Each structure stands twice: as structure tokens, then as C-alpha cells.
Length: 297
Image (tube, rainbow, N blue to C red; front, side, top):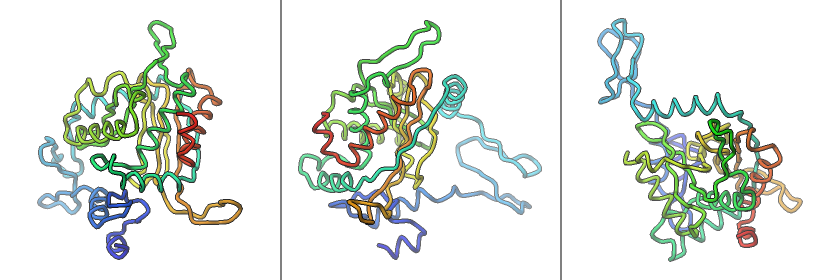
């Protein structure tokens, strides 16, 4: 497997494992490599350089061959409008935390072997989602929105957990309705259903409405962290970075541990630095030691 990854230029630590006991399979490596491949470029007669051309997009190359113009489709247009509105309306602040998630990785491996979870996909994102839900329960002020028209702050007594999903049609952010009411297996099923629907292009406006807080899993692209833009109508978004084996001081000794980075962006009108830090710290504590969820859960 290491030779295949080396031949394809893939870093094994960045590949999500789907095999028994958390083993990275040949299919995992090939799928990750395929997602990392750049889009195929099309060439045109008399043109020395390739230009983007995707069948079915209605794209056209200018007469001089120097540009490709692609119509903005409805999903991408709505995404662009929402991101611009969010970026220029809500004052964004982002806080970061580097976390040892070795115990989380061991828990994921155990759950994959558990008969109760045999019909659902178990990933570190599942534990992160559970951790965020518990952090929201402990700090409910983070689960809010700013109503500019009414000049009110709206605190939500439910959590519709958004998961940012990259699709061929563009970025969509469907949410798991009333995610706070789900047990771990129910949350796993909700994540699986949500991502499958998004990838199939069947996400509806209702699926994306009334979100209260969001996770964006940039780690699936091998990215360590970022400064995510808030989903409109929400006060916070958590970026979950790639999990890598790194040297880490553990019990006074330098050891090889699984490490990731978390980034929490929030609306500074609603969330001050202390509240953001409390929420981010709680998520990190559960990822460092999932047993903490039993204490807070």
C-alpha cells in the first residue's frame, strides 16, 4: 500500500480509511488520488495552451482562445451570493487549536468493528460532530443568529447541524435536523444520508434551510486548517483539518501521535473571544479524550 501511495504521490496519513479496523485499503488510496487529480483540460485547434472545458456546462472559448467563459449555475450563484453577504455583514473572527486525536482514532477503529455500527460509516468527523453538539449544549449562546430587521438576537433551542459538502454543482451546506436529539449511531446515519444525497445532487432547499451551526471538513482534501466563512444566519462554523502522524510531547516524552487542527470562525456581534474559546476548547477536549463525552453527555 505504501508503494502505491508513493507512486501516486499520496500521503497515507491524509487518506480516510474505510477498511476493517481502520485499515487503509487500495480503494481508499485510489479514490483519494482521483479526488486530488486536476480537472482534464481540453485543447483547441491552433492553440498552444490548454483551456478548461467541461461537457454540459455551456462553457465557451473566446475567439482568441485566451479565455473560457462558464455560465454561473444556480447552486454556485446562490453559494456566491450567500458567502458575499456573510463576509460583508458579519464581522468574522477565527480561533485555532492543535489537538492530539490519537484516542479518537482508536475509538473510530473500535466502532468500525462494533456490530451496532456495521451498517453506517464511522469516521473522525462523526466524533467531531458529537463533540460540537456537546459543546453547544454546554455553551448554548453560540447557537444563535442576528436578526438585523428586528434588531434582535435569536437563540435557537435546537441544533440543525450543517455539513459543508463539495459537489460537482458547487458547495452546498445541508443540515441534520434536530441533531442534538440523536445518539451516536443516529448521528452517523444522518451524516451518511446527508453526504450521499449531496453527492447525488438531490439536496433540496429545505435540506439547507434553518441551519444553526456548521462543520466544514477541509481535512478530506489534505488541508490542515482554514478560516471558514459563516453560513448566513449562523453564529459559528468549525473547520476540521487533516489528521496526520506527528511528533508530540505525550506524558513528558516525544512520541508519534495523530494530530489535527481545529479552527472556529464566529460572528463577533454574537460571540466574543471567550465564548468562542470555550466552545473550541470543549471540542478539543473530547477529541483528545472521547471519554469526556460521558461526563458531559
